[in-house]
Image (cartoon, rainbow, N blue to C red; front, top):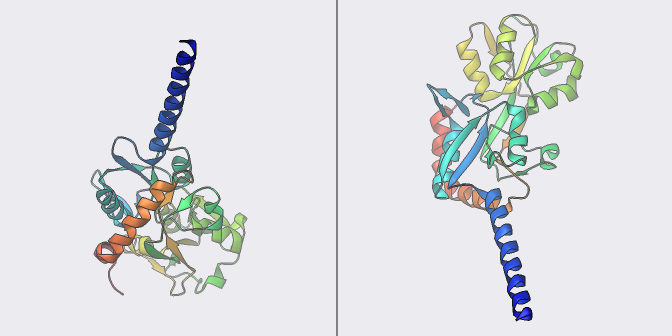
Length: 251
């Protein structure tokens, strides 16, 4: 009897351990059938507010991924430099925010296959003496905090010449007020900002070309595989191209 009791307890312990593992893995995947996306919703046309709703390229691609996975999408708006932490700590399942794949970020998170190509450009006043990337040397450059524009500008022109802002819109506002000389940001938001602010222009010379992807917790390889599979299907059936064409007019 004692032996049987020991065996029963041992089996119960194994079952508990297996259930615990399953619960942990499930927690790393998604919770309650909801795919949570972290973003910074001030980066049009990738993500921005339309009334109280967050819309844009990333929002629609994330929605299409969620549909493929049979999940409901929930979008969390936060500062850009909080997105990776949110994914690392499990507060969000993935991050989509016009985020570039970099070696530094790959040390902290995994990235999906790329779904779009971005170009970093420079916004200046129309009467600026800045005519090329080289002319940025010694100038005061505005960037969005923790973006690749921030990283590249600090590397190329010195952190002492870079002013960091929580939102791209804040950097552009500072430019219109004469507080800085230029803004480095993705080409698509740049076009929106220039259209909305008279007296600004985008330099013809591109600064950097990069790939955008979704970021996922390093422990959550199952979700990474599922997202990559969904992205491949959405590319193959033309969904992603249709979303990009909807928001980005052909040059």
